[in-house]
Each structure stands twice: as structure tokens, then as C-alpha cells.
Length: 290
Image 1 (spheres, one colour):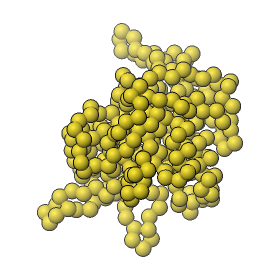
Image 2 (spheres, rainbow, N blue to C red; image 1 turned 90 degrees about the vertical axis):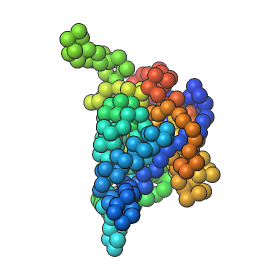
Image 3 (cartoon, one colour; image 1 turned 180 degrees about the vertical axis):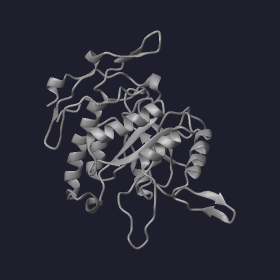
Image 4 (cartoon, rainbow, N blue to C red; image 1 turned 180 degrees about the horizontal axis):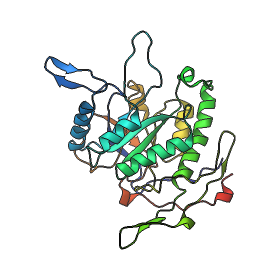
């Protein structure tokens, strides 16, 4: 499989960026009368943390996710894209990166969800690619072996990126009366055919305000690191993977002083992350995709 983004570097090269892990979908803490509370469904707690992070010049907030819960000690939680959409309305600069599994969704659905979040947030969305180590019993499908999951994930990411590019940047315009005009000649099928996916396209969401949403990958396995090298991703450096495998990512925000109590990560092959700074990429011909 040919990867047109392989080896791409940002205008700023490698860099250290900061993110706040909100404890996955359900670890928000909020002060109560008798100390911290642990209401995993409290949107106000998430909003408070996101706004504090934005004020502190953190580049992004990041949500992990799980597709299962313990039967002996179950915990409720919120789905990442839904939660991030709510946070987008309460923030203005901070990035919004959520984890979505390539093993239990389809590329078209994921591309549509994340790109919709990107428009809602005016160009601050990102996708943390995960392959999941559990969840097959909830989806009625087998969980592939570890190496096979990453092979699927590589194809999956390719489909998503192609769908994000199926609308040219200037396909949508507005006339003097504010009426939307779509140039159908600038909206393209992707006609993707590979071992695991067959997707016609185009996507039904127009081009990202930041050209395309951010792609992040925090896997510490050999396959995960190889996947991160092949795409323009944000990846967690080895030092952080060894420290409880905690990682953090970047988003749209003005940089400020480096806080000492947040996780740090390294950005490789990542754009400068503001919509005006994202380098344009030439479209590849549909006929040469496979």
C-alpha cells in the first residue's frame, strides 16, 4: 500500500507539545462539599477542566475510551466524540482529541464523526487511533490477533484520510446573499479497494477547517510505532510510554509557559496545528489509489 504522507515533515519539524488527559471517559473530578466527587457523567466537571486547561495554555485535551465495562465493578462513562462536541461549544482554542477504535467501527462513520467535530470546533479536532484489546463480545465479531489489528488499522487510516480529502478546500462557497454554493466538480469519489475495505465516497462532510483533523497514535508496540512513522501523527515518546504509558497530544492553541504538572509528548510529521499554518498537500488521483 502506497502512503503519500510517509516522510512528511511539518514546517516546524519535531516539537514538544502538551496535552491534558481527562482520565478517559469517566475520571473527571470536581470539588464537592466533602472533597472531590467522582461523577463520571458530570459534563460541568469536564467543562471546568477543559476551560482551565485552555486558560493554562495547554495545547489539547485528550480522551481515552473503552468499549467494555467490568461486570463486578461497572462504571458509567460518556462516549468521546459526543463529550468532545459538548466541550467544543464551551472552549475556543484548545484541541479536542478522542480515541476511536478501528476494530469496532467503519472508516466512513469515523471520518464523518471526527470531521463533523472539526467543523463544530472550527478546526480543533483530532482522532487517536486505537485498535482495542477487548470488545468483541459487545459487537458480535471476533477480535483479530494483535498484528492483524494493526494491518487493518493502517488500511483504515488510509480510507479515513482519503475521505477527508474527497472535498477540495474551495468546493464550498457563498454568494452575496449568503447562499451556499457547492462545486460538484470539486467533490470526488475515492473508489478505495483494499484487502479489508471497499469505500466509494465521497464523504458527506466538506473539507476540514484545518485541512484535515489531527491523527494521533499512542501505541507502544512495534506495530504501533511503525504505524505512527507511516502517517503524519502525534506519537507518545518512549519515556512517556514507560511511565505508566501515559500520553498527551496537541491541538489548536497559542503556546504558553510549559506547566510542570502535565504530560508531555513529541510531535513528529505533524502540521503546525493552526488552520492557517497547515501545509497544503497535493491530491492524489483516484485512479492511482490501489
